[in-house]
Image 1: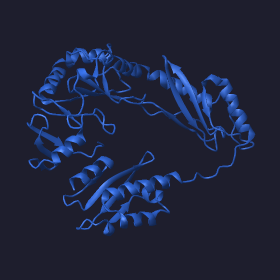
Image 2: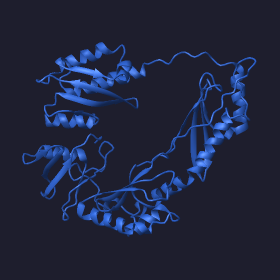
Image 3: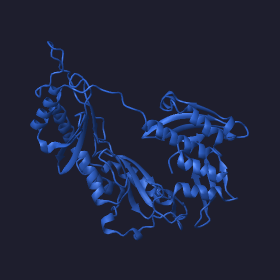
Length: 389
C-alpha cells in the first residue's frame, strides 16, 4: 500500500488524498503542458468500479467523445495508479486529436505586405516562417545574447493584434492600434503605423534593453558560481539555487525590474550550518549596495566566497543521495539534509519518503514523518508536500 501511495505521489504530485481514509482525492492531472482539475470519490472499500470522477469543465471538454473509454478504464483498472496513468494517456490522445478550425487563406496582398516588412527588418533577423505566414520567428542580438520572438498572426491581421511569445521574466505586451481601410474595409498594413511587424520588433528591442541589467546579473551568477537548479536556465528564469558548501545551498529569487536589489533568499541545508548564514544576512544587510553587482553584495553580506563549478570537481562536495547514490532522480536533486552536524548527508525527497515509510519505528504526525537517518540513525524529519518528486 505504501509503495502504491509513493508511486502515485511521484507520478501525480498534484493529485492528493483529502482525508485519512483516502476515499477522496483531488488535484490536477497534466497533459500537453496543461493542468486539468479533477476530483475522485471512492467508496469505503476503495474499489474503483464504484468510484465517481468529477471533472472541471475544461477536462470535460478535452475528453469529449472519450467518456466511454474513461468509464471502461475505471471499471477495469486494478488500482488507482493504473487508472490515473491510463486517464493521462487518454487525455494526451484526446488533446492531440483535437483539430484546429479551418481558416480561409489570406489574400495575396497579405503575403506581399508581410514580405515587405520582413525585407525592411532584414532577412538576417528572420529565423522561421511557416508556409501560411501565420507564425513568424525573429531574432535579436543584444550584448552578445541571442533572443527570439515568435509572432503568431491571426486571420484579421493587422486589424487584430497578433500573439507574441518571448522568453522574458516579465510579461510582454505590444502596443497595437488596428488599422483599417475605411473604403474597402480591409486590413491595411503600413510599416509606419503601430500595427505592424516592424513596430512589434521595435518594442521587442526596447524590452530587451530594459532587461539587460537583469540578464547581466544572472549571467554572472551562472558563470562564477555552481548553480544546482535550474540545470539549464532559460532567459525567463528568475531563481537560482547556488552551492555554498557541502550539502548547503542558497536559493535566490531575483526581481527582474530591480535586479541589483536584495533578492529573496532561502538557505537549504542542516540547521547548524544554515542558522549562522541567516544571522550574517540579518547582521550585514545594511552593507547591501545597489551600485555593486548582486553576486558581490551576496559575498559581502554572507562573508563567503562562492565555490565555482568550473574549478571544482563534483567529488569535492558530497551531493549524491545517500539512499539511491544518484544526483538526479526524475529531474530532482537531493534537498533533504540530516541535521546531525556529524552527518549532514543529503537525500532525494522521494527516496527519504519511501525509506521512512518502510521503517517500523517511523511515525507520522499530520504532514510530518519522524524517523531515523539512514546514515547516522539520528532523528530526522520529513515534511510531506504535493510537490513533484
